[in-house]
Length: 100
Image 1 (cartoon, one colour):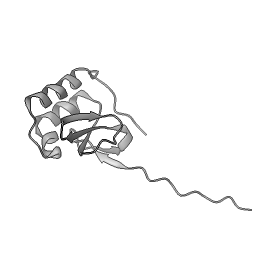
Image 2 (cartoon, one colour):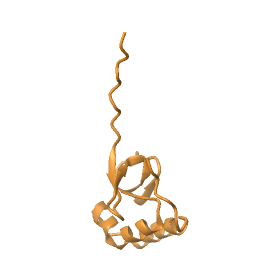
Image 3 (spheres, helix red, strand yellow):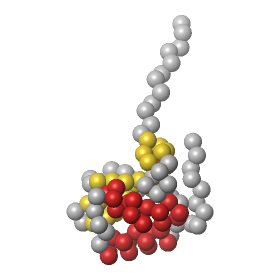
Image 4 (tube, one colour):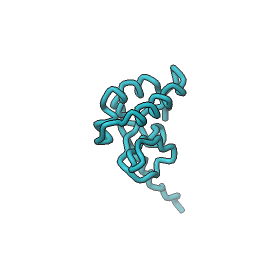
């Protein structure tokens, strides 16, 4: 009896708003706009408008210059900006992009 090939599982793809590189959703971190403000969503399941960024400092710096606020369709409050900048400061300088 022949073994049946299982269909390949669909892997969701997302675009980093910093470098515009498309990768699997699990390799990027989600930022979400909620009614409480902007949050980093490590689970990827919070309600709200989301955008994705690599865990690389240069991607975050580029995203914070404008593409992140555009993707989230909002202007950042001072509190949101400080929150995101504090998150960036905790990233290692040369965190490598994850590869498949």
